[in-house]
Amino acid sequence: MDISVTLFGGLRHFLPAGSSFNKCKIDIDEGSTLEALLQKIPVPSDKPYMVILNDEKVASDKFADITVESEDEVVLLPPIKGG
Image (cartoon, rainbow, N blue to C red):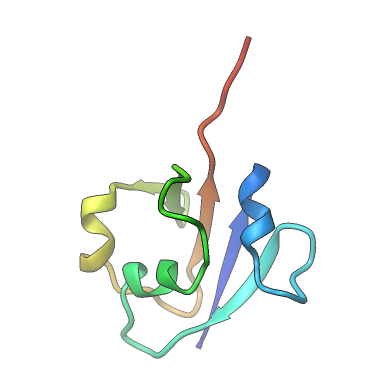
């Protein structure tokens, strides 16, 4: 099944080839966890980011407990800096 994934800011450089600007579809087996999906996105472990699943922030300690569905939308946001 395909999951819609959007990466913002500098994270979009880690999208798979053929992605459009900052969005892609990632193919994953039915019943897979959010953690399994995130492992398919090659963001280095030293790059911090926040995960939003269907407009809800997800704590990193819950990634392995959440099963993704085909209609889910996943967003990765880097830390926001202002000034």
